[in-house]
Image (cartoon, rainbow, N blue to C red; front, side, top):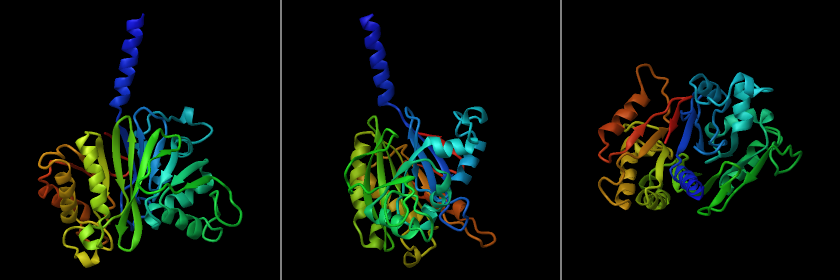
Length: 326
């Protein structure tokens, strides 16, 4: 009996040690199309609740994801008294990380807030201040938070953990650490999530260090190189907003394929050199659509990334509603 119990404990420990992450794309574009703006969900395989990674488009993305079978645990029967969309929105999202205060990263959160359940929001002090002062201020939108002036409805608990300090992310079972990024004069951020000795990095908008005159990405790559060396890093979501023909002076705090490849080279060097990033999933987000006839920035960006990929990473472009296990 003792041996059976020991075997069960070891099996459970092993399953926890190798649990991965589930990622769902609720929105993948970097502007223009209001129903498909940057927003992802992530959870650990062994947990129920997702963390929202930005919230540009929330409810439209949930509907698309349901159509694609991303939430098999939700049915019309067990969703009651809500629709399946409502059940995912209210009951499966355990909180949000908002990388910065631009509309294309939080509009869905604002608009859907009257129907949301109580949950925490995490971000830098700058981002939380922007939410409190400029959005949930009783003028632009009712104050659905627990801070600020006027009537506080209290749906959202605002949290601004100190940069580079680990914290527990609500009831998601995830730990998080937030690091600053430079975004053309706007303060942006990255969150490193971890559980069961595995980790995942989500980047808000960022420009390359050389253009931004910053060392924020260099600091982040140093942190992530330690995750790579320890074989913990399962993947990252990072932006590539423009194709390579956009001049540095018109990037406005964003990346191109050429710049992303250069930045990932820094990560490779810090992680042990050639081959250290083999198989790493790099999910490309925030591509800005074009309204010009005949232009396809998404196809062009993915082609340029693949052509320059001597790192061995796996570039992935998720579409709205797609789900991915890492």
